[in-house]
Length: 131
Image 1: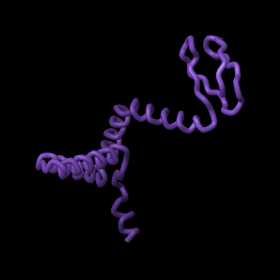
Image 2: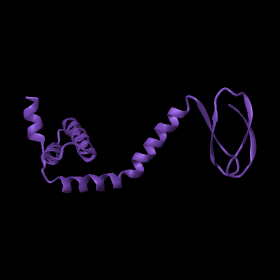
Image 3: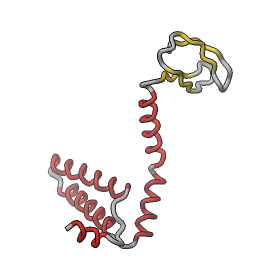
């Protein structure tokens, strides 16, 4: 059975970021259509699911890849903001992140060093903070 699926999907585009996003939006719209009992939302959710499967099984790989690249280009700012926030949260376990009082530059200081004098690498301002 697995081999049949592999042979069937050979030469087809498959699942990508745009496919994942359209499927998530379709599921959200489907839940909303159930809550509000709206036929229009239900049709919209089914249209999104059908579009997702159309892209999944498409053999026009170049066109689907171009669609995905356009989607990624339009959502780049949002994705990088979330990645930055995730990175900052991971760093907060081992470091404090302070802002320079004059130039607002972010400065990362290791935790557990007590009161230390911090020198801003951008404007050379010195200030004391607890790490």
